[in-house]
Length: 89
Image (cartoon, rainbow, N blue to C red; front, side, top):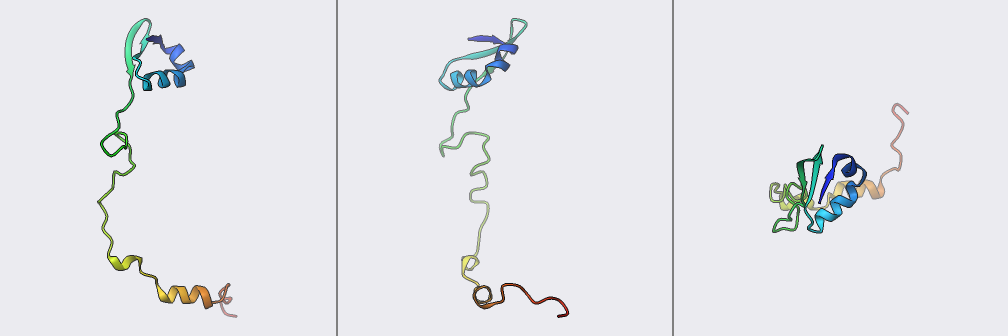
């Protein structure tokens, strides 16, 4: 299917859906084909190419103790004052 730019702007959602369904969608300017809409193929991980999701997987390492509870903080939260004392008072 070939559509001109005005029709593409007006019906972009529908054209994207058709391209995702496998139909070839070409956008033309003054009748001359200029661009093709095409779906982005997912990668092996199921994340679309170019997506930032999962892009930092494996890049960070944490010490095992990083997630251990902080006993002092827990005690302060459970037993401490709700509002700290006023400065100078």
